[in-house]
Image (cartoon, rainbow, N blue to C red):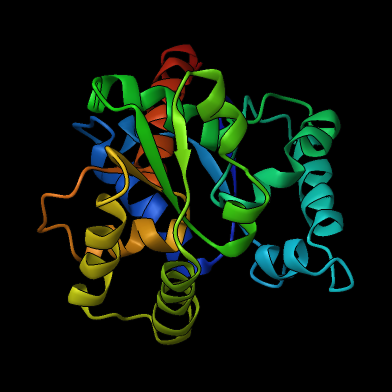
Length: 236
């Protein structure tokens, strides 16, 4: 296969499936051959990213991520995407090991705010404890002049419960639980980044609300298509 990209997924699997589904739905096609060429690595056994970031005595996901990058680099993809926000904690080391550019999900998400919510100044971040505590979005937001707003301890715990117990644990959730989290976060900010692919899945399941969300996975899908269409033009 020529002119393709690699998706590093499985973090978690349902969220990766959501990314692929949206990727295919949004790709402009009139026939089978118009779809994008890509490889999906659904590495479900990678240790939990947030667990490691909160406690470095726990197994690190970095060796597995590096192994995936190195294996896929042998196939020479045009670019990589990582369908997990928290995994971008390791971005610099992964990019150094990669044979091609890795799309930086948090940076692309922050860039999209200028278009979707041009008047926003205070940006809230919802995600795993690892993503929020280790500031995976902070640098990109501050570089663009935004004020970073993080959830209260109670709201963070409720978000973690939604991510790990409902979405990851049961592959289902109550929409009102997700919407209540958004409602509380909105009282503190102008726009809310969904900084976890499970929250992106929640958004796909329960999109009927008016909260100003910036969906990181949706942004990654659109950027993947933009780059993928350029590859499609080069196919032999």
